[in-house]
Image 1: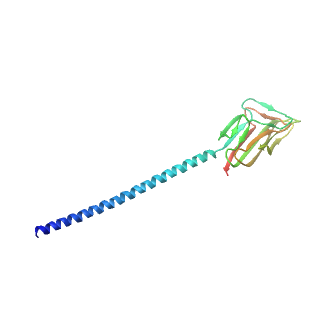
Image 2 (image 1 turned 45 degrees about the horizontal axis):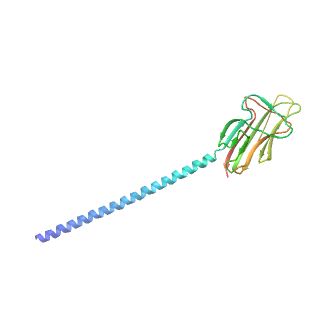
Image 3 (image 1 turned 90 degrees about the horizontal axis):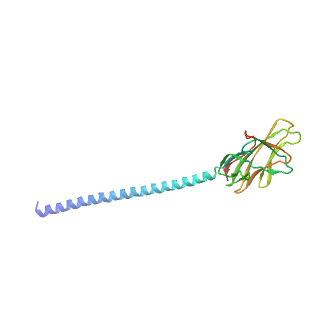
Amino acid sequence: FSIALKYVIVVFMLYLLWGCNYKMSFIKNIHICSQAEELISVKVKANNTGNEMEILRKEGEVNRVAFSASLLDSGSEDIGPFNTQTNMVFKRVIANIGNAYNPNTGFFIAPVRGVYHFEIFICGHGHASHGSGAALFKNGEHIITAYEHQASHYVNGGNSATLLLEVGDVVFLRHWQNTRIHDNQNHHTTFSGHLLFPM
């Protein structure tokens, strides 16, 4: 081979080698770009999932509504009779998840639109002239009554109702007229409620 031919062969080999390296570099760059795009996609999905979980957590907190309270905080007392129905304030809070029950007013105020379940239990001392009774009201509308009457011994009455409430609806109890209600350190007379599901 002549020197010129050797030179042409060397230049051609270098060209092929450079081309291969360029192709390998190009393929590597494509692969790196693909990996970067995939990593960005995973980060976006993780961020979206994190946002969705935060939204669900906040919704879950709003949807956690439950309370239970007894009439007296301490001591023992017969309350009533009254000539008219009188609002009842259950002072001893057993649970108040969501803080929808107010122990100063006796009002439960719905924080979210949904279906709620309420239970009332009353206790009284038997009396010839006076039974024991309370009624549950929604925004001033009479819904249910718990009532029991006998001449002696303890009497117990109870009732429950499931209601569809709008945000801001008020549920409370009224002492039934001409009745006596008893409570003591054993907390016999209670008012409870909880959100079954939002609507």
